[in-house]
Structures are given as C-alpha cells and as structure tokens.
Length: 237
Ligand code: SAH
Image (cartoon, rainbow, N blue to C red):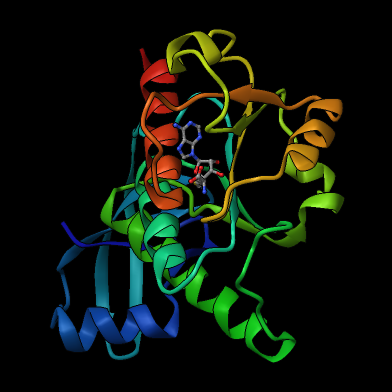
C-alpha cells in the first residue's frame, strides 16, 4: 500500500505535504475511499480518502509496527566527491540510521559553498524522506548538519563512539564487542584519503574507539554501508 509521511491535523485527520498531495492525486490517481498508510508523529496509521477535492484524509486505525533499530545510530560521514553522499544518505536511511552528520576533515577535498549548502541539505532531506517511505520506517533520519571534525557538536556523540580506521588491526566483531541494544552508537567514516594519525589521536582523546572494518580497504561509501549493516546485525539479534 502507498505510504506517506504526513502530519496530524487533529486526532482523526492527517495532512500530506503539497508534493505528496500531488503524488497521491495525480501520479497514483487515488480517489475517494482509497486507502493509504500514513506515518505521523512516529506512528503508522491506516487512512482513507474521504474526499479528493478538497483533499480530506481520515484515520481508520493505528497499525503496530516495529521496524526501527532499538537504539539511535548516528553516522558521521566525511564529505566525499560526486554523488556518493546521495548514495550513502539513501542506504544509511534504509539501514535504520537515526542521525547523519557530514564532516569536513583534514583530507576532505570537497568544500561546499555557503550558497550551495541549503540546496544540498534540502536534497539530502528529500532523499532521506523517500528512502524512509520506501523502507517503511516510522522516522525520517535527522540531518544534523555539516561540521568540522575539530568541532563536533555534542549531538554527534553517542554512548559508544567508533571511528572506522583502516590502520586498526583486528576484526570488526571484536571491535564492536560493546555494542548492545541499550547503548546509542556513533560511527565516523573518513574521506577518500582517510584520517590523519593526529586526527585519530584527537578523536581517541574524545572517547572514540578505533575500529577495523575488516582486512580490505573499503571505499568510504562501502565502509559506511558495511559498518551500518554490521551494527544492524548486532543490535537486532
Ligand atoms: N586512503 C586510505 C583509505 C581511506 S578509505 C588508504 O588508501 O589507506 C575511506 C574511509 O573508509 C576511511 O577513512 C575509513 O573511515 C573507512 N575504511 C575503509 N576501509 C576500512 C577498514 N578496512 N577498516 C576501517 N575503516 C575503513
């Protein structure tokens, strides 16, 4: 069934965004009495169209759904070239991430102009909303913002904070040994050129745990997707 993120108008009615209204009426061609699923305030509802013009959608009942990870997972991802961030934002959403922050580090080659930032953020938010709908999530992840690695905001930190570091020996299972479903987790992934030793040392001083993601060097986007897959596996077992 078609699903949308929307807001509650009152206890019995929901309101879609203008874009979704258009999608519902003109792309899906839905009519009076058609049913849709709507997520509002982190809850899932079965809804029915009472009238198409003006659009009036009412709640039939709440549907129980348990698709979110048991704790918040935050991805801190260094800015990378091209449209890799689009891919990572989409896949991270599918894998259940709660927050994403984009990071500028010493070896980050990509710099966003101030004038581009708002547009980029809107684009990432659109990708996250569509991916959340597609993977039937109850929340759209939050894009915390774009930060310098030297000044991570406190929202970037979780109960457990990991830095994916390719020079760390050992296996991923051992590295993530402390993961459990009562502790929120942040995972930091570096840019194409990796992190400098100094950066890693500073992060360790701030409480980050160095983590290997296996024996092969992964591209940044693969590292992010792999790390989130492993965390999902460990948290949902
Ligand atoms: N330029 C570096 C690799 C950087 S890979 C080199 O060639 O040595 C980009 C990012 O992916 C890294 O900063 C790290 O966060 C992550 N990464 C890639 N492979 C990894 C691995 N095997 N273990 C841990 N992190 C890894």
